[in-house]
Image (cartoon, rainbow, N blue to C red):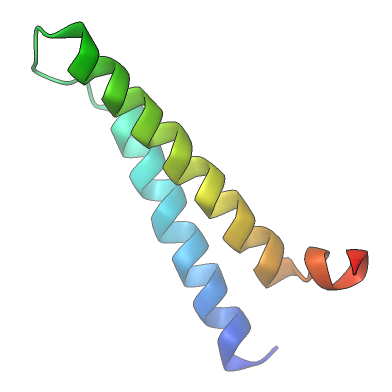
Length: 64
């Protein structure tokens, strides 16, 4: 495993953590649009983390 793959794993872990925190910690806003934006941001962070995990695991290399 080279250094680039280690960086992808670190990036994936941080993105997944950010996504989980955005989804788990309730927002203090009474505005439903801001709450929806928070959920959308959490899902996007989870998706980005999944892409980085796929890169780190070599899934895309096997597919291409």
